[in-house]
Length: 152
View 1 (cartoon, rainbow, N blue to C red):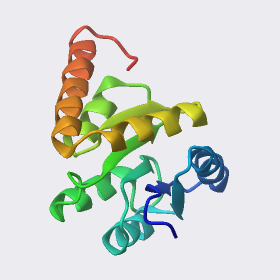
View 2 (cartoon, rainbow, N blue to C red):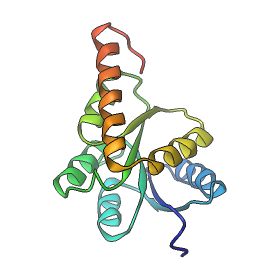
View 3 (cartoon, rainbow, N blue to C red):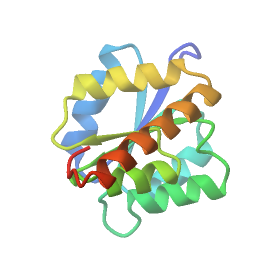
């Protein structure tokens, strides 16, 4: 494993999603690991050196929100860029995920190439810049929510 390559953990209970996201990350020169569920993800994040993770929110047993809570308790959300994926297109879901430490929220179905671009962009930011961006996203989603918009 080359130290210069950025490492991204792809967390989803659907193998096809892990594969297509991972392939697109690989095309951008990033290494990727996979976790099939939230419990596996928490352990992998604690064990590995990851720059980012792509996290599905809807998984059985330990879901993405539980993963975000665990990462927050361990103080790990500031150390890696976290992009969450959700089938729910609601500002409240985005707000909850970002208040728990996610830096970006994408709706399924999504463009795997767009996920890879977003991962690259977030990894390039300092933790402080990611925090500013996260707060801006929370504010934007909050404004949409107050306006009664159902889309993020």
